[in-house]
Length: 575
Image 1 (cartoon, helix red, strand yellow):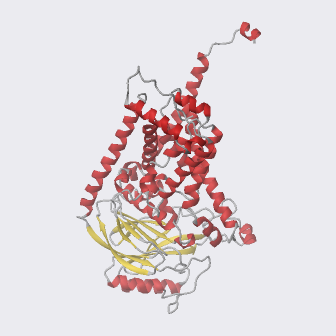
Image 2 (spheres, one colour; image 1 turned 90 degrees about the vertical axis):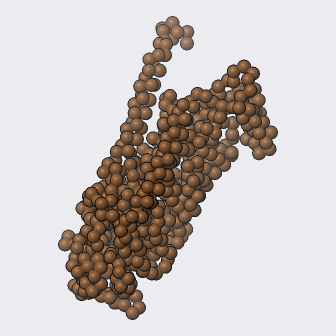
Image 3 (cartoon, one colour; image 1 turned 180 degrees about the vertical axis):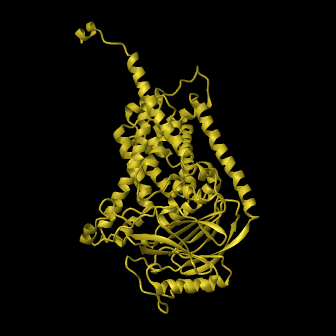
């Protein structure tokens, strides 16, 4: 299905490709490990130089698929072997040579489950902490989630195999377009892309200011299929023009990234510095309202005390994380105490709170208090977490909520907000929202210049796993995509400040209580990018090419059908 017939070498001339091919035959037919994989007839075919398609038996194919999954897992944030994502699919490509559709499905699922289950071990923790699912059922849900998400990989490789078999479109075009398109449509609760796996690789991500994370995922897919083509067909001249074109695109992408990173680093060095106060209380995650810390009260919580220290150090803006109910909007005593404290500190404060509006609907909100103690504005979270913040379909049914004792579903906000706090245009986001590339770009586009992306999170629900590192990968991508600084304050850490070039300026320790003042470069005339203004352009172009592939498939198969000789009555009688 993936392979192709080898072009015959002219005459008896000895070419580099023939040497490589003959060496491969010798290794395949004499290696002890391959004796279990290669059948007698297949060995004879190889020795007779008749074909080069896949001759691996199922155990070796499974091994290659699993190896591909391990490479992708090691590229995950927290493991940080991010270069592997650029070649991680190649073993799977080798396993899929001449595979049936059934084999393609299962090999892709095997490959997909390894990075998903290995990268999302915190799923078992969150279903216990939030949904109260006891062991070992929580581990079963973890495996089921891995199996479900792995269907994305099966769908991608089945589609690629079908188009490769039934059209003449180069696979170098098919694989990146299919990968990006199907990934963008697949309903996945935990939004994560190939781009997240290589976020720390700064030269590779600079061009996302034009394409967003979709462009980076496209380039990763292109790198994988190009590497496979180079490895699989070293002596094959047919199609080398497409390989050369793909290599040129990859070189241009990285060339721009290297030059752009240097330019942005030099530019940022000339910017003024804003002092950002970060409060990381490291409170336990709970569905109920927690009592005040020992020595503190509802009107004078721990966060106020930590904020006073930051204000004394000259903080222009102080940020608290998501995760605690203060009752600012519903309890006059708390509201008056907070306003008075902020007035005394003289620094703008943005904190998180849960509230009920006049319609008695629960909200997840970011509240901005001006340095004079007055309420500036409120942002209600717009992109809610499925299961975690709302139950699809039944979550707003009061009888359903009461019957099963689950937390009531939150109500999403409707408006994009910008807080003009401390002389900056702060774009407020809450937790989950930072992961969505186009969602963030649309929010950044509200202001033309001077944007700073702010996210408040509570990752304590996910346990001591890889979630924090995965969350941070989105900080880097969003900063470069929108060429705006990113402030991400997390209840239990690691809180981070990222520059518009993608460099981490500050990173706190995980599961640590503390408060820090971070000097963040800021320019009132900077912020925003081509991607911020046109967040759907590149992805829609890729989707359109995907549609063209199937239109071409329909037309190509129709033309083949028309060229077939029609059966005459004489032929029919003979049959």
